[in-house]
Length: 315
Image 1 (cartoon, helix red, strand yellow):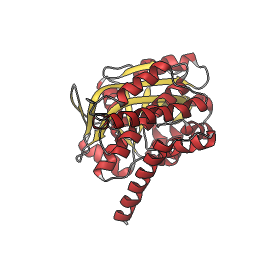
Image 2 (cartoon, rainbow, N blue to C red; image 1 turned 135 degrees about the vertical axis):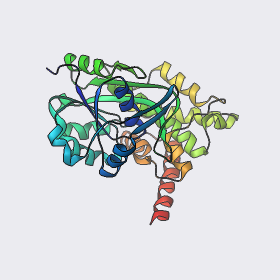
Image 3 (cartoon, helix red, strand yellow; image 1 turned 180 degrees about the vertical axis):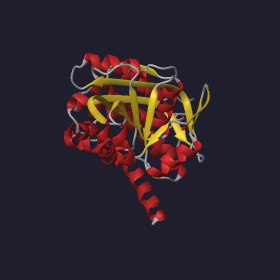
Image 4 (cartoon, rainbow, N blue to C red; image 1 turned 90 degrees about the horizontal axis):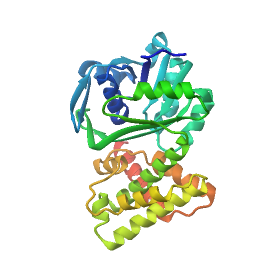
């Protein structure tokens, strides 16, 4: 059994992985980042800078590239914070880090990536995970926290009380709210419904939640999007609770809310977004289940057109 303190490997130092990694480093955890060569060189030279709502933090973490990982392996905990389109390459890179007791927690949206992970690694290594933090990268690469709160929910896909206890102790640091969940798959579906709903509303309307909800028609549209997403989740065997549905509806129809999503911010900035990971796989799931999602379909199309335009501009 692994002894504490243990070694943490964070794959990716973007807005999510970089934020949580910095918080863990600030608390004295043994953290290493696995990065592509260009990103590794930048972090080695400039460090990681996080502008959180409670202060600014600069760290100079240990950094490895895939070529250097084998000599440093194995690790006790792997936090996987990459984009969905980088998942396959990331799994290839991190494979040497996985030892007999290693726990892998992915922070990707949706649930389909779990099957990819379980195909590559034994199920005992793979946990479900939900990371909730609103952060973005500015032009200088600083991680900027946009709204309050940062949490990690995780759970074993098969019972393993010892691994859950170790992981909970390892992640419980100031600045991160951590909880272990018995039904982490439901939590992952809840987050997916949340993200799909708010992304569809803001991307299709081209405005933050509050602006959309400032009219009666906008409020009705937002309610309909939430209902569509919840219907898909229920058909998949993971119905959201009444309380969650009510809370999400209230969030999506709050006329004072400045809330947006990372996909919306990418669209506004004229850069590629994670449309397929966020909405495309959700839309495909709805089709497989025979559920009509006309508003989510239209939002997905809007974002796919955006991706096409960006690709043409870069060609």
